[in-house]
Structures are given as C-alpha cells and as structure tokens.
Length: 326
Image (tube, rainbow, N blue to C red):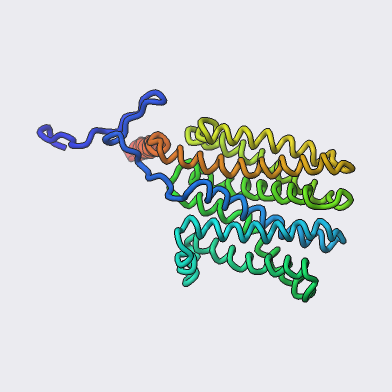
C-alpha cells in the first residue's frame, strides 16, 4: 500500500476481555440457524435411541426381557422424536423428503438423514412386534438391524456440528464424537434403570456409569485443549448447563453403582443420568452459539497460526542463508 492510500476498513483489534472490536463491530460468523430447544433435543433423542437399540439387543441375547422391552421403547421413541424435531426445525415435511432424494457422502446432514430414516423404521417395527407378539422373528431381525445403525446414531450429530465453521464445535472435532457417544450411553443406561426390573438392570447400570464417565472425561479434555474457545463451555448459559451436567452425571454414576437392590435408587439414578446427558447436549449447543458471536474465537487463533507460519518462514530463511556457500 502506498503512502497516499489508506485502509477503508479498520483493522480488527483484540483487547482485554470482554471488549473486542471487529470490522464495524459485527460478528465474523453467522449464528446457527438451528432452533432451540428443537435441535439440542434432537441431538439428545437420537443418541438415546441409538444406544438403547444396542442395549436392547444385548438384553435380549442375555435373557433380560424387561430390560430389552424398555430399551426398545427408548430406541423407537427417541428415533421418532428425532424425526419430528428435525421436520419441525426444517419447517415442513417436504424438506425432509427432499433431503432423501440423494445421498451425499461429504455432507454429515445427508448421511445423518439416511442413518435416522432406516433406524426409525427398524426400531419402530421391533417395538411393535414386542408389544403385539406378531411376527417375533421379523421383529427380532428388525431390532438387530436397528442395533447395526445404533453406533452411527450416537455420533453423527457430533460430526454434523463439527463440520461447521464455529470454533467451539469445529476445533473440538476430535473429542465431540466421544462426548456424544458417552452421553448417549449414559442416557440409554439411565432409561434402562428407569424401565427395567431391578433383577435385570445390571447391564443398564454399568452402561450408564461407563457412558457418564466417558462423557465427563472427554468433555474435560475438550475444554482444556480448545484454549480460548473452550471458555465458551465454562461461562454463561453453556457453562451453567455443563456444570449441571457434571453434577447430574456424577450423581448418576454413584447411584448406578449402588442401586443393585433398590428400585427407588435405580429410578433416581436413571433420571440423573438422563438429565445429565440432556444438559450436556444443550450446553454444547449454547457454547456453539456463544462462540459464533465472539470474534476472538476466530481472529486470535488465525493470528497465532499466521505468526507461527511467519516464524517458520524466518527460520527456514536463516537456515538457507547459513547453508549457502561462502
């Protein structure tokens, strides 16, 4: 730029928090267009459904019919709720059907639609056979089919939000699938503790406790690794939700490990695990909204990367000069 030229747009300036100036004081990223509470509830219900389908087949294979029935209800109800919530967020059913016209493997939303749709049909067929006693062989086959989609159901929403440009989500792409998988297992275990007889609930208790422990550990690692963007999980509405999730999950773990003979304790532990899982999904959603509104999460890491590249270029230049023949 010559001396006579001057910048028409002021440079973005990082100041001490919370003051920060970006171009014309406008956010750099747009807020997610997804609605709340529809989408965080969709994240929760889908994860609950996927893990419940897996738990249902394990229970059926090990001779626990009460637990299998409760888990199958959870798989079907969670999946159908997910479809309804997604359609509500899209605005009209035709948009959901439009997404099913093609399969785009590079789009997490397209892939997720094709995971959710067959899963919903299979899980509903399995629970219908369970309730009516009609076509039990086909019902069991449908349950096994739903379980095959169970793993992807628990994690595809993590891939969906990590594929966005929002730093608190995108930069957490390593940990988010683990957090979502653990949260899903905790929810399914919690539902099993609520719905299954005490004599059959040991697998649900173990799944719930393990899932909640994984969720707690992975979310802690995620927040620490993210640096500045990780603060969005600790402050504001997201921070309150994540703290509540930790307390509820810890209480659920303690109860799940000690509820062997108490129906009341099993139910309370199940509710704590379910509530902790839901609070995690809502907390992660709110952290993304806060991150999109804060220009620091975009500019500060960009400047750090640029400084690192400049330092590397200077080091390479210095080595070249040293190695050059005299």
